[in-house]
Amino acid sequence: MKELILGGARSGKSLLAEQRARESASQRCLKVVYLATAQALDGEMTRRVAHHRERRPADWGCVEETLHLASRLRELAAADTCILVDCLTLWLSNLIFAGQAAAQAEAGEAIACPLLRDETAALVELLPQLPGHIILVSNEVGWGIVPMHPVSRLFADEQGRLNQRIATVCDQVTLVAAGLPLCLKQTTR
Image (cartoon, rainbow, N blue to C red; front, side, top):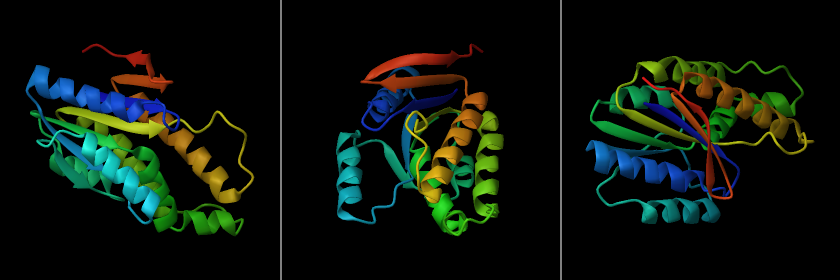
């Protein structure tokens, strides 16, 4: 089962993802691996990472991957495993800045970023092939005004495109607003 959980900032999407992972562990006897994409580069992010870490059960594994998500998922996925990826939003941001897409947007250039293109394509292609339960968390950022800054516009556009592509290959898609889940897609197998 591949599952995408979308929502805005502080919507409850990570809490729901953690709840679904706990259910996989208790009802389906799956081991859980938390795959973190964040980089704790400042005090605020360090506190956020610590908060997420404190909420997780001690028996969950934790792996960090900031760029090569598809490769790491290929290594970790197994029929007896639930992998919770939190989150695609930070992963996408990492790709945009590591792959020079941000610099290209800032300079007003056309975006030609093989890292961004190849890594997102690899994830979309790989997901349907993976065994086990994969839960992906992502922000829905496209409901506000169009950002003024070119890098912010690039990010909002790429996040929307990524969410659409991931939703297409997932069995279940849930939108969370105010802590309330709304099922957008449910495919039965």
